[in-house]
Amino acid sequence: MADLLKNPKLCGSCNKPGCQAKCACNLVYYCGAECQGKHWPEHKKQCTVALAKKIRKTGREHGQDDVRLVKARAEAAHALRLQGRFQDAERCYLEARRIALERLGESNRSVGLLSGSLGDLYHEMGRYEEAMTELQGSLRIACSTEGERSLDAAKALVGIGQTLLQQGKHEDALARLEEAQSIHKEAAGPEHPHAGLVLSSLGNCYLGMGRLDEAATVYTESLRLDRIVNGDDSREVATTLSNLGNVRFDMGMLDEARANYEEALGIHRRVKGERHPDVAKSFSCIARVLQEQLKHVEALKMYRKALKIERRALGEDSRRVARSLRNVGEVCVVLNKHDEALEVLQEALAINTRNFGVDNHFNAEVLRLIADAQKRSGDAGAALESATESCRIFGRLDVPSDEAMIAFMELAQLEAEARKGREGA
Image (cartoon, rainbow, N blue to C red; front, side, top):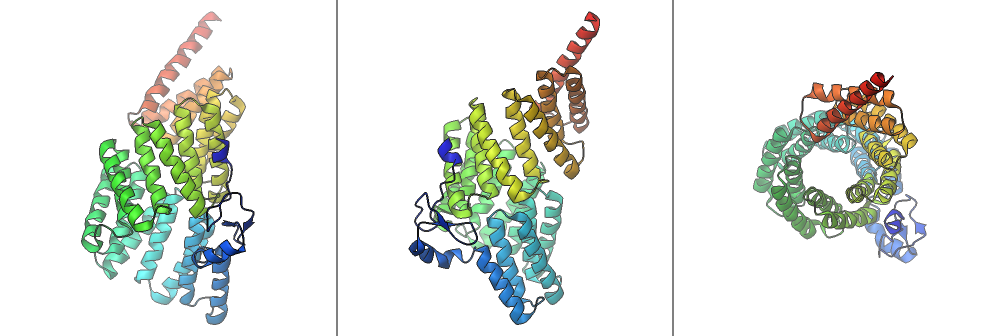
């Protein structure tokens, strides 16, 4: 466990652990100048220091609103996104698109691609309504400039499908993803670099719909393609490994799931650095396995590590930060760390309410956990109040779920205890 939590400081060239030297961008470690020199032709494409210099040089030579700055800023945005610096990436994408709009017009392909990149970024940040707006704009431009059966259109459809999936709209998501797959097969063939992404997205949809066998089949094929097309140490392989771990977790194959998650964690660390949200996501996935195995102390360490990374990379008001706070709180309840549980769960509730309002499934579940913590700490009155609000939200949503059933059972028990207390008095 300690080995997983510790930053291995891997050399970006030879993967030797325990390195001290690192690039000025603070992302990649090296065991010496020789390895750094060998790695530079590849790393300079992602080095934010080098890319910032390129932006400044282009601006000096051609002016701050020159169209040549679009490419430089887009490259910097992509690198920042890969490092998990999402807010910095957003600023770069927005500035690149502003210049492209002014210089090239709103129907230009570059504007559409930048809108698609922004949509994908907002999806990763959990800002789904903004993501959908950008991705639909990207699809509209792709259809008008490249055609309805173009790769640009397929890419936008994948993003739309993924965002619909995160909003729980599984049937709509599946329709978009199946259309994207059809276009992709027609326009690019089965071994295009994005073929695995399309399959993984379909697998995510099957997983969300409970079609586990289909999800496992699709993920396995996606992993095979990703290894061939992108290489064993690519971020595409890491993402698919995580997805495969998710379906194996749902199948009860916990050891196999953890093996997938740990392999993904190693790749994310080597490719994206220690501070990327995908590293945090791997920690959370491993913690979920530990939690299922009742190893709550170890799970809590993992969840806290994930939360620390996400706060720094995504900002304090991110939906993913709220989810990690909820994870920490749930384990703290089990471990009878009542004060910490209430603190982090209340913070999760506040973040989610600011972003998505009061009446949603996340708030109902967090309120149920708050009620549990309050009950365990001896505050029966507050527990009853929180449980009542949780069930009010679940009832208004009118969507059957295990969490809702548990909430109503716990509320009934609290009400019975309250009546018994009043009768005894």
